[in-house]
Length: 316
Image (cartoon, rainbow, N blue to C red):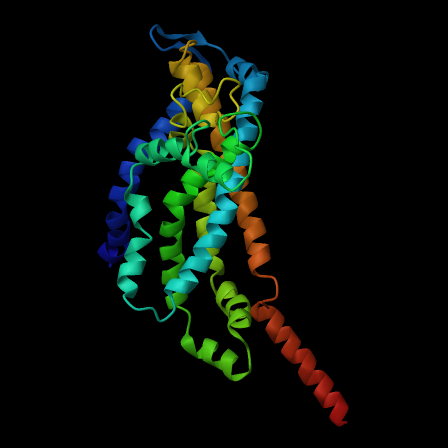
């Protein structure tokens, strides 16, 4: 009997042991390093308390990197989730060679981020890029993709969307195929069109999957490094750091001119806290939006009791 109680914990123990070694320990060790004067070459030079955090939070470059990270995250995550749901709906239809189309949307995901960055860097080149060539050919002005403003963020967000939209579409497709068909058929029998069926049946039934994709997109989007790092040859986020993200700022402090691992670790922990806060906010907002218009079992029971009471009263 004791073996039956212990065996499930033994089965899952290897994962948590490996996680404690390669995940939890580095996390705690980074927190300790963030409170030290730690030079990349000289090593530990004594404690510093919260001086590293105070230094980082006082730097305008930190807040600029934070704003750039949020901007690229919003431009990439929001269109990505919407496009993934729509693509999944198309793939869920009765298409010919459906396996080919379903595997095809996953191809961008297997391309290395560096390769994607190099290709899109050529497409969005200011002087000789294909995008500007098309714009000027149809009479529109060329865009300074590596200049100030929002355009560099749009170009980097397009790289992220290119890689991850198909991957998320397959996740939504798997969730759509788990929706009972009798619900769809009942809605069609009641006169609902395709759009109404999709918005009132399919999307609410995708609520757990939407929450999962939004949270994972938040975690990945706020850690973005490869795409902005490879967007130009300098790799510093632009001359004025106009597309430098928090991950790039972390790298610059630790492996750049300062070689200060303590400050770099402080940025890592601040980024970790930002990700946790935004993941929780996204979870709450997504859960509230996706549950709008759908009644919980408790509400349905309460409404049924009220309806029964009114009917009984009316019969009297």
